[in-house]
Length: 180
Image (cartoon, rainbow, N blue to C red; front, side):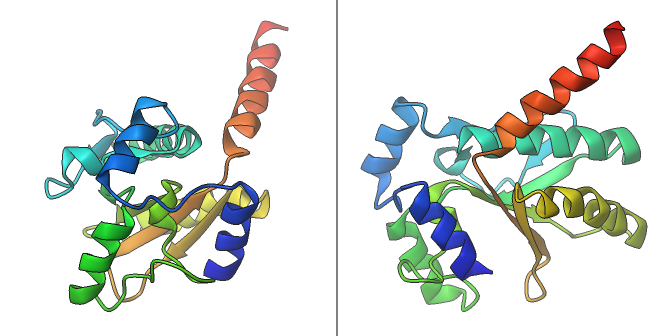
């Protein structure tokens, strides 16, 4: 799965973010956008403010996903990880054997700002089943690539750039049906 994700990332020509200077440049150009907490979405306290960024389409997905989840369960989703730099990933790999490499076919997708880790801690079977059922059609459409991590209690989700276009089309159809 990581091989395919990296192939798509390479086709999109998304850079693996080397360090904090490059991260700031991407933030200033709005290639990476901030993710803010809301009623439906909380961010793990250990995720520093400089790492609370992602690609615009990833943020769109997270807003939609968290809102739908909150509407169903009246609980927010927790984000554990978003963007990382190569510098940060190297440090992480020293302590976490599950952390992906910084290069190659299986490089960490967090290095590009398209990936998010959502906590599974405290979720019931019903909530996990709902999440699976929510993600499956999006996966089938080629919009996301979700992995339920076994070694860590997270859903690791890669969001592809075509999500926003799909979302805009879906919303336009829903809106037109409401006005007829």
